[in-house]
Amino acid sequence: MNKVKHILFYIIIILCFSCQAQDEKYKNYDSSLSELFVAQNVNSSDISVLIDKSDYKLSIIYNETVIKEYPVVFGGNQKDDKLMQGDNCTPEGTFHINSKYPHKSWSKFIWLDYPNKDSWKKHKEAKKSGKIPQNANIGSEIGIHGVPKGMNKLIDLKYNWTLGCISLKNDDMNEIYPYITKDTEIVIQK
Image 1 (cartoon, rainbow, N blue to C red):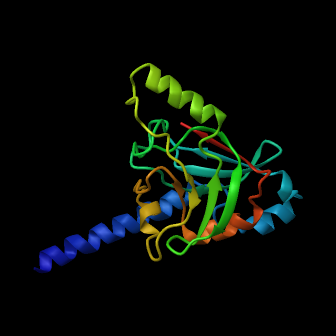
Image 2 (cartoon, helix red, strand yellow; image 1 turned 120 degrees about the vertical axis):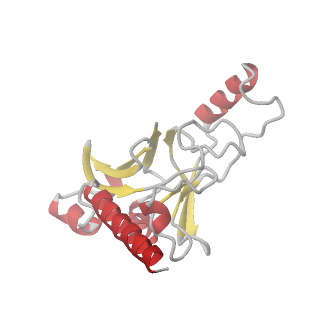
């Protein structure tokens, strides 16, 4: 039994170091977004968001400069583009905001305008080519949100747990939430 405790202890230490190393990969992650905006004279109404699925990053961008990066996770199938409801993919493309509101399960929700015109085009082409079933529904209510309370480890471990949404730690969600508006462009790339 003592050997099992030692093994668990080492696993926890390794996870802690890997999480700490992960945070260092994100630009200005340890700095407050509001302080960065002031220090860099950022007009928050002119920011955009870039979400990189391959790097598990959400970047706040101003004048083509990355101001801050956050760790994020995606749908269960993080590699492919969303073509239909139930494929567990996060959509790729350029989106805007439908709405945003507090959410009882994961802090806050920033609802994207998926499906948009480009999403519908990809969906119809996938049906036409036989990539998805003819009766497939495109899906809806894709957004950016936090995690269930106490579940930040989902982000630290890069566990893709959503049905297609982008998820980040609740503190990170609370930090970006005030700055995201209907005019904010959200680009999601592979």
